[in-house]
Length: 180
Image 1 (cartoon, helix red, strand yellow):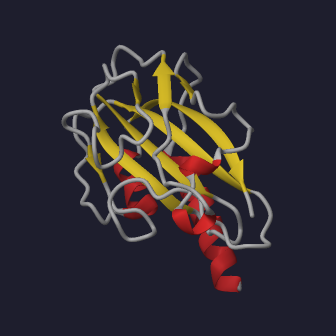
Image 2 (spheres, rainbow, N blue to C red):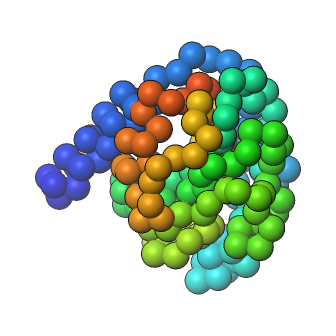
């Protein structure tokens, strides 16, 4: 238990130093749920009763200096221990969003979907353990000053945060909740 707590504290510390950015105009939204709202069932894993469709997302206010975007979906609930549900890098800055169900099928040209904590590339929807309450799923969009991130498919959240350190121009978040 002490090791898990220490790991969570280290990751929280890494996130704080890796991503200090000034507030800007970047905004992230989903037509499926409002910030702080409940994630609809169709976006959760089949084992939790859903269809595992990747989230429909839109964004505006990308800085002119952005050379690429990246997107993460993380469950920071203590039980989930920063479970990575989706990590997309090298998104062209002119792209204004992702369609529902785009993961693995109709992603923007040039972007890469990296391995998630489930062990496969692409979106893996919410699937919290029963009886652990509502879990927050934090969707974060990063505007970066790099065209491509030099990270492999197995980078994970920590590797991603190291790769973007010092390259984040702006970021925006959207949080949805799901529990069972």
